[in-house]
Length: 286
Image (cartoon, rainbow, N blue to C red; front, side, top):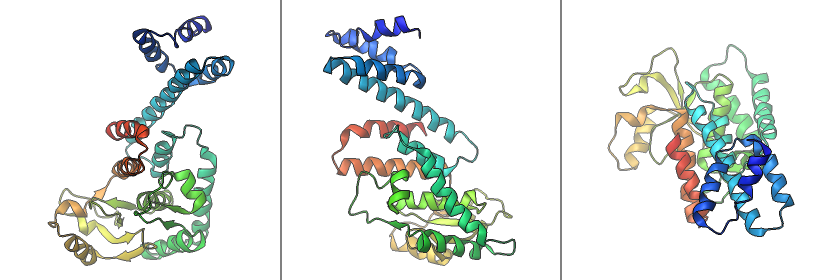
């Protein structure tokens, strides 16, 4: 869009006529994210609080639309990267999120683990090494769900604070494992955050695929490893029917959807309702 047309549209943004204002806002929000620096210049030059307020809303919508588009593209990948998915969720409400520090934190953990690995390590030994660095050296810990905060699912904040909700801790753990080449995934057990280590020599079937899982991992309990019988006891303790789907691998997309749903629930509890429509839109788009 050329400068003259942009100026013409912006001149009507604080129009008192609601229909005109809505029409102008709709057209402006369709602008590419690359136009935001120009819009910010107009915001700085304006002396009208109403104009600034409306332009700020336009900028926020452009940024959100861009992140939603990125998340849709992310979810369409055959094997979407868990860390990238968590970054996009964080960016949806913090568009100025610095990604480089996040990636450096992840790479540092991966590098430390890699230095201890060799070709002779068994899957269990690999997980023990990852657990040692993730929980003991870097001291990542889950927060109690009884004390929710509006940052406990932000991957950027969680990596710096070393604390986060159960879901983001599991996502970071599994994301690091996958980037190291470990076949660690979530499972489809409701209201529980459990991971598994898949035996990649056995193809996953549509049936109860416990035969393709070497062991299960509890990322909330310092990566404790357990077997299928233990998982059956967990399911039994929930007083729910034992279904084949509870043993099936969860996709990385479903893990990120659980993170978004958690954000919806937390923001509701904290009465931060202005964020919830965007979270719901993100959830539907994945």
